Image (cartoon, rainbow, N blue to C red):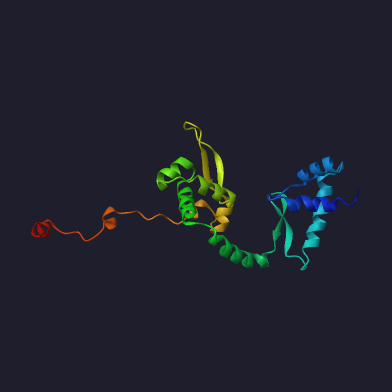
Length: 194
């Protein structure tokens, strides 16, 4: 079969993560019963890269970490970023933002620890943050019941424009006297009122 380039294109298109030449060759050897080498796949991918480099396409095939993935071309990044900010911001509720902030600053953290800080159940919010791919499951804690541990995701970093978790804004230290309500009055003034 000489038209296996379309199958390579389909595999790259369907994956979220970069897929390497060996993975593509292995897949096609099972699906199409082809015996392709890594070089065969690379040659076809280079043809596809050339095809998508034309101005007619808004996306391209990029090589990332030894694998291939479809990406939007650079000149469209600002348009997409603006669109995602507008649509994405509308969909994060106050409770989702609070939960996300707790996870971001306290990660890795369990759902129980988040609930202890927020004082309410966060089952639904955690589920929605996982669906939006803003948090990931890191593993399980060694605590009784082996609760799931959560941390922020790569998408979280992109969404908020952070290069690493160290780029999170610093939390301000809270001083108790600045948090008091009303005016402080001296003992003498208190006695006069009595």
